[in-house]
Length: 385
Image (cartoon, rainbow, N blue to C red; front, side, top):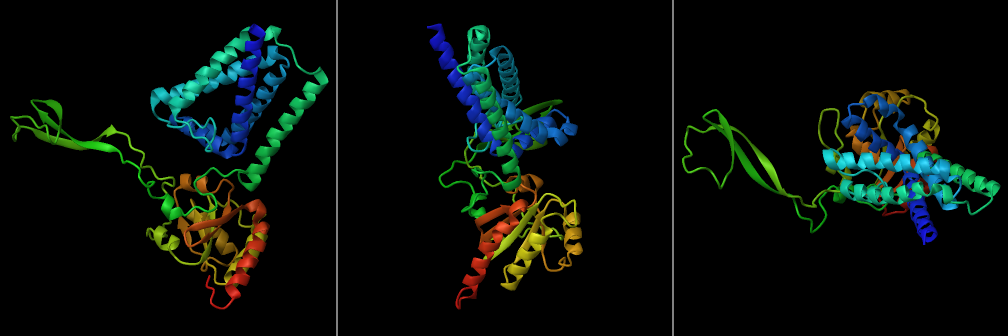
């Protein structure tokens, strides 16, 4: 009976760790941004520079530990690793629940978003299973020989690193972000159809006899008069709704401060938008490919826009390429750019406000056939860009 329970616990823990690690490996930058949320809340911004390294290492540990527990290999060692990992995860999710500062913990990335409480409950269940395995780790034996187990673990380590390297270079394999192909940005900026907004009431704060008192508009005291000194008013949340837009804080702001978001998204035809948080080089490795794309788009009157979190660097890049007067530059919230552009920079092809395709800077050349096809379509009489 005990052996059966141990095998069931091993399979559940192993599969959950591998599944969780693979989902995170699909978007290691997403996990690093989630880490930065914790670091900012803890007033430890210096660690933000190492968040991606922490993310990659944690994902590798998670996948390898999951494979090891399935194999039953060296549970004396991996039992401790599993215990440390689940205690760490439980601390993070527990902190998120208690503090209320972080709503989602990123346990399964953006593909399966879990609220903090759901993540905490999941971690508590895993903690119980791992404690059971840890207590009996000495009687868990490997299902394969030592060399075979080592080969499988080595393969899982290489695979987990390779997936992360690929997704960091070429964008997530499975796009679970709100800016995936086929999305109309303007529509996703609106609350979902049929959603319920937050229910709030207005509270008024007054002072009377050196004491502060709160009243809602429909429950003012019977003796309310000029002796009550108004202090402030605020909205009190009564019931949380679900009217949150999928795309938040997306705006295209000109140098003069004008919000051109809807103007650009509603403009008919094709357009290219280059999203970049910053441009540290005036002649980066992808510059040649971008120059070809720019020439192709310009020959068919397809507008190109830059969206950045750092206007100065964007202006310097465009100036160095002698196109500063021809490419409009818009600033946008950095968090929105991080979501839209997992690789920095990322090029989007839109038709009106709908995303047709996107490419990381490492694959700009892959956009050549698409733009060539667009050029042929636009060349047909009656078709407009």
